[in-house]
Length: 84
Image (cartoon, rainbow, N blue to C red; front, side, top):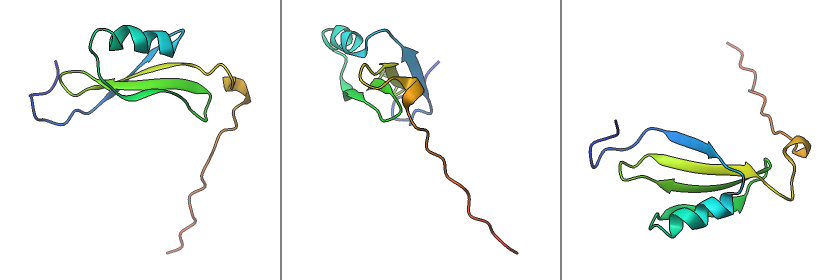
């Protein structure tokens, strides 16, 4: 499984953990390079991202401590109406 070296990866895997910061520190201490360090997202999750040697993106997620998921306002877009 995976991609040949030089090919673009097509996928993102989510790993839900209790604490993103602890998972980040554990992998970082083993040499894993993250391209997005832990950060709180507007939708109520804390995330961090890294790529494996095949270029597949892995995202660690946990609930943000200061923004419970059930209180986050969801955003929606209405598609414009088109007449023919």
